[in-house]
Amino acid sequence: MKAPKFDFERAESVAHALQLLADAGADARIIAGGQSLIPALNARMAAPTVLIDIGNIAELRAISVAGGVLRIGALARHADIMRSPLVARHAPLMAQAVQHIAHPAIRNRGTIGGSLGLADPAAEWPACVVALDARIVIAGPSGEREVAAADFFEGVYTVALEQNEMIVRIDVPVAQSGDRFVFDEISRRRGDFAIVGLAISWRGGETGALRFVFLGVGDRPEPVDIAAADFLARLRADDIDDVVAQATAGLDPSDDPYVSTEYRLHLARVLCARLIRRMTEVRA
Amino acid sequence: MSQVQISLKVNGEKVSALVEPRLSLVDFLRQNLDLTGTHVGCEHGVCGACTILFNGEIVRGCCLLAVQAEGGEVVTIEGMADDARTRALQTAFHERNALQCGFCSPAMLLTARELLHENPQPSRDEIRDFLSGNYCRCTGYQAIVDAVETVSKNVDATA
Image (cartoon, rainbow over all chains, first blue to last red; front, side, top):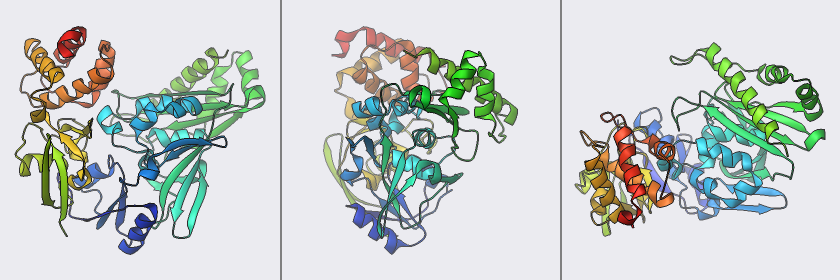
């Protein structure tokens, strides 16, 4: 179908975008890459009165490192993240995950800020930023504020963002030597939304902790933390099933016409065991 | 709802128009410019039939508004008549029976072209992976993968 009618404003800066948002009122929407919003418009599932295009704000596109933090601009496209040597080096989990995001033509437009703001429960970035304990930097009328990724996602398509605010950056603590990260997902076809996916980060070595974050099996990415000492003890006892049970205990997937709750949970357990093996096999 | 003035380059030519903000780029190309080589399938980013080049990279023409293309450069299949790699792909598609109805072909060609640009000698798995966002309802894909593989193995013809 064709999109409903709306007005269009082009923001030249973050301040300008915030001004346009304030002026436009409750039915305005920000458009970045538009790879979810435009399909939603075309399906008439969204009907904003005004679209505010932030695509030209170059400062929001940058990826840089400063003070142990990888700073990813909200407008960094999936394709930019895929090609970024900084991301490959400092956030290897994201470099793995981006391979699973949609298709090349969509990665050339879609942005990380857009994906986080939409908060699709089957999307890769929300799970990754929670797994990495990233911070979402938000600009609003009274300046910038930061929200921990785990507090940002409130439910299906629902995030801790006010109507007069916008995401400007994602701050990711850089990987340290010895940290381990794995990401994978199961989907019916390459690039489709995942039936289930999993990000695991293991930071701090034998005295640190592992964080498991699933996608596609709940209304939001929820971390499960397991102390490395605990994990290693069970690994030595060859008791991966016990770790899998703990990591998947809180999952509450819904049914859909293609995948039953039981099947989705089964795949979550299979994927979890597979990634634990992959993570421990690559131990130096 | 107010119309918006846009200026962009399409297949090397400057184009200016007054458009409704809700007009997709692919509808602009087809309806305003009569460039009907780009096809419209699902209109929600799934089938890939509307693939075009925007600022040198493939994008979904249905998931980009014409107003977002302001100042950009668009190339459609019509603009690829003199592109050696596209011509080699067209020949291979013909020879390997990689099309039947042809609806998906312009987009398949542009997507395959971008793959070979990034990765001149992809494996069959890499070809399938890269083309996974483009639906073909006729061929079963085997012949399309064959055609792209043929071009990738014949590097001289695509230089």
